[in-house]
Image (cartoon, rainbow, N blue to C red; front, top):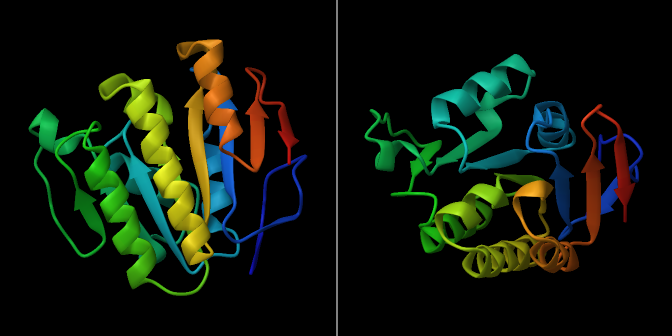
Length: 192
C-alpha cells in the first residue's frame, strides 16, 4: 500500500512500512511538515508527543486542519508534570518520556486495533533521548519502525540535529528509508 507524501522536494508517495526522519534545527518550525504528513491520505493517525501535552497537540491539529476524529494522541508529559488528565478513547498516557516500553506498546496497540492507512508521528526522538538516553531511544525507534513495517503503516520521526553528537545522528539516520532536512529558513530537502 502506498501513501501520498505531502512534503516538498520529497517523493510524491512512499510505500507502507516506511519511516521518515525529519532532521531540523531546535528552533525549526516543524508543525507545517508534521501536520501535512498527518492529514494527507490517512484513515487513522497517532501522535506520540514527548515535547507537548495532549491539549497542545489537539490545538495544533485543529489549527492546521487535521481531522481530530481520526487522531489518537499519546501524551508522555502530563503524568510526570502533575497536569490534569482527561482520559478518553483517543488520548493515552504513559508515566514519562522515558517510559519507552509504554510508548512502543501504545504504538503496537494503535496499529493492531486500527485498519486502513495509518500514520504515526513521533515528536520527538530528541526528547526521548534526553529523558532516557541515546541507546534506549535508538532501540525504541527501531521497534516502532518494525511495527510500521509489520502493519504497513508509515511514520515521521522528529530529530533536532544540533542537540546530538554526529555519531548519534548518523546512527539514527541509518535506521530510516527517507530523511527530510528542514533548515532554519524553512527550506526543505529530502533523501529517499
